[in-house]
Image 1: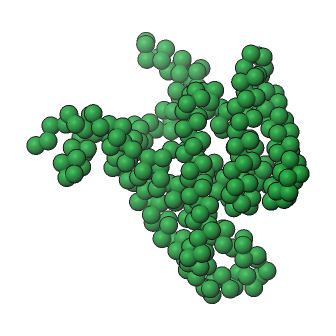
Image 2: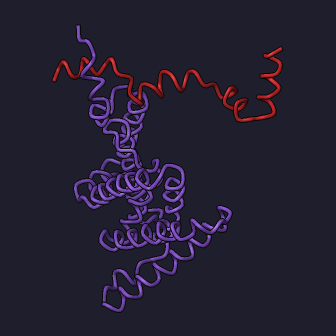
Image 3: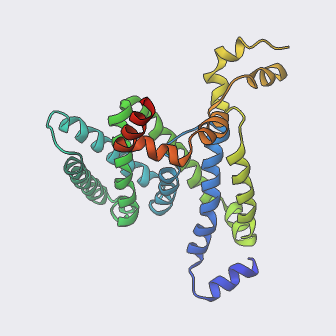
Length: 216
Length: 49
């Protein structure tokens, strides 16, 4: 472990906190690379990042179960409320209420079937996931169900990838051994921020245009 | 493969679009003006003479 990390821990900072705070920049850079180089969009950078850490806190299968319930309840609630004309914030309050009830039901049922990992899930990751639903629903309202579904799948894929990075032993060792790697990440971020090449997805998206370019 | 990369240079992707067109051509002042109906109206009326 690096001297810096030793020093921080000597000040009674929890090692988990140190690791997560040093890992967060990596996940953020990973998401930026996915967007700029690969072309996986997701809901901005905040959603996949925070969802990654929510999964870390809940364990993947329970996190996925809770997230699935939240997404379906949210979509269903929005669909049901479509015909009732309500202002945005009160309507969102109803959606969030229904989601809360659904999650409570899920973890209760989970406990009943001795899935204690589910029933003992702490409130913070659940809250994070519930709050993310607002982005999903507003995209659904503005750009349609399809776009919202694709973006959520992309968000989910990135968060699952992030989850595996966080659980990767070699990564955990590396981050605590060389915490200054974060400076390297900043350099990569600047490079990503100036990257003007086509995203991988755009080779497919613009395939017909590319085909018709006169090469000389 | 090489020609694919060469050809793709002629296509304006999202990254290049944002960096070389959207960014430089949309000053903060101009965006603020466009977002303000009343100021836009005043400016456009003045421009119309």
